[in-house]
Image (cartoon, rainbow over all chains, first blue to last red; front, side, top):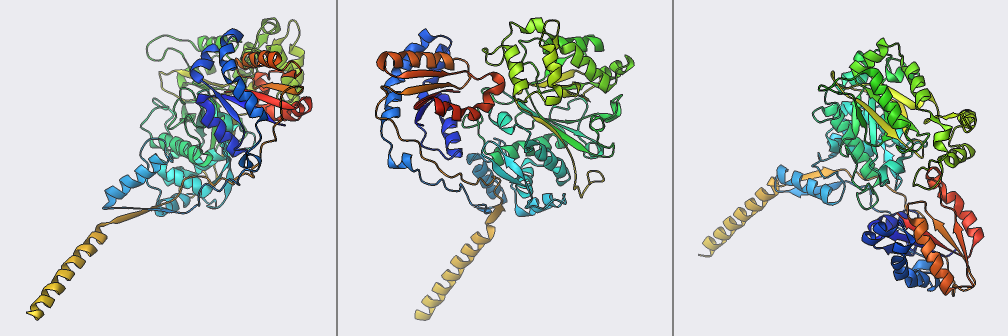
Length: 459
Length: 123
């Protein structure tokens, strides 16, 4: 079926990249002027001159006979051979600089200098795991580059990670490439979604992950370089680049190291997060999830707060239909130790807190009747019914939503209570953080860390 | 005299050789590994042959779900109707926020509904 594809000048490179990725480099595209289109798109009247200006080109693209190349394009060639690269300098510093120039100019790095991934350093990284260098961990979106254990090791060296961290990095990559995880969205979306990476279990302590004051900041090598190793792996193996096929309009928060931290299990009044998922206390795990920028709740060191007040704010913000799509996939509530302690004193367990949040954030049916969602068109009720029909709302939860879609009903904002993931971390005093992901697809996975050879935990 | 010249030439060559060797010895080569994932190139596919003209054709306008795309396609539809009154315009429903990633599943239906398609606006 012949057709034509409209995009805008800001997204033309992205569109061409996607067409090539799918083996259709010849798709005829028309790029509307971005500086005019986005300002005019609210009304037909304002769009009229923009559409009129490209109409003849559109017709021509639909009737103009194909060139030979369009009809039968040349086979797209493999982008590169997987061979080592030799860089020579007058001395070590010169060679080091030239390696960095090569990597940064070729878009193989994140804009910061890298550690040259020499075979010797990569071998040392690989020695930290029992997993084979040739093992295919999975395909990395959006270009579906093949992530082998060795490729992830190369990127981990570049990030400055210690070999001891490597099993954590591998487990996190296991999560990102899981078939259920929508990696394309966090890699390419126009929204500023960013991965959250949370480490649990004895390995977190052994590797000195920060889970207290400054846990999202700089200074801790484990937090910083594990996050950066993942950033570089996703960038180089999935092959994304800002404004080419990573279209985050304002960039991604914590773009260099992601939101990488550990749960402070010692200060938690409850069992470790991973134990609540069914793992053993002696297991170590890493959770990866997609999130928007977190809400910061509580008074920190400067203002009074109450645990119940923080919960009330969570309810207020999440059950506001303007805040996001209903039945969001994931919330990650990071309680600072004082808040967790206060909630524990009030009698909450992690499970009862999840149930409290599930119940109190549910939205009255009457409030949803007039609400629209997503891009401002479909009604929330239609969205939910569609989600039940197409299985996005899991079959075992569908009846709950069907029952709620009637007068007097209350529609949950997540599919089940355990979609509120609750961990304890941060300073004392501290702030509570609420990470959220509005979907539309599944984007969180927890994986067990295995195969470690250099640490007491994580075997 | 000739012996002296040969001796001087040999000395000069030795000095030059030592300098070259010295330069080579001072160079450092770093061998590094490629960080990029290998991407199996997809089989390429040509685009479909065009139509000779739009008159009398069924044209499906496919909204990609983003804000304003429906407005833009509305205007395109208006101009099409003016210029090609014998063409049939089919507006494909705007996807919802939750189903936007399912759009590829719709393409067979789009194909059944018309002769041509116009897709927009990405993004």
